[in-house]
Length: 349
View 1 (cartoon, helix red, strand yellow):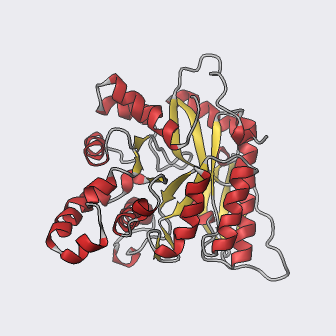
View 2: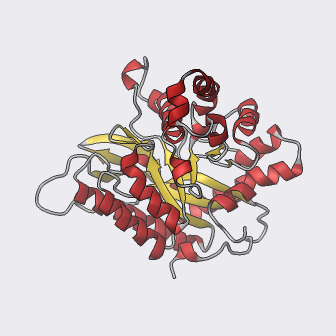
View 3: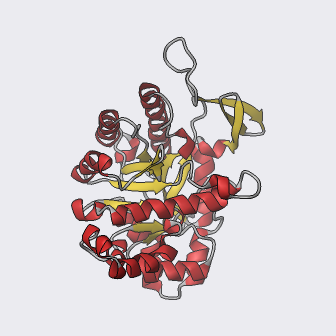
């Protein structure tokens, strides 16, 4: 039995945390060389930079400097206890999806990252569950790795990008993958990756995370609605990072268009606003008023904690933010852990 298959263990001494964080990432401490004799464009490596940090290097260029909290369980557990998080759902840093590299190399990369997540889950003794990656540029390889990480590694779900080399996730070509996810009864977490529209942003590179990510997530969620994904796979549990991105703002316009344009009504047998309430979203929006808006759009049963741990651009006090936004104790419990417990199909917290 893998560490991910274990149920959550009793609270550590002095720990009063109960939150479930569905949005936090892993970067392995090292990457192997790619198979074969030729270099693979897009293949990552790690360069130690001292003081418990390392730099992810891709194509000889520094991509991101990360702390050892990306791969050291004890570092994560200390922060979880401090911020009231009982369980983290571990997923790859999105640049490790590898959708843009050779399919066989991408398969090797995702297997390595998933094995690193599984090893962390063992070290965490029930405090971590896995949401692995798959090489979605190749359907057969993606489905095979999905089966491996669920059946052999005991993962609770899969993290996928908001687009796969520019193709939205609502595109029918991904239906075989979602059919397997639904059959296995596991969750899908959608994270932004290589967002569209970067040429329209004026300013430094971090604007990709600040503005590009929520825009691409909103478009991905809209593609699920306009493509009827949840009508085809009604028991699919799918969540979107960054509060669903721009979807909450786009939805009234999409709803009006549904009424105004016969072609949209023909394409969507169910109103967009109703479909949206089948989606899950995380609470990573940095604003209490926006959290209340998300409840109005998606419902009290669909919002979950998400922090983007361990990166610097994250919610430092996720449970406190929920407590500041909502006075009702029952609602706080749903948002802090109960909704995520359902999403991840956890028996107990």
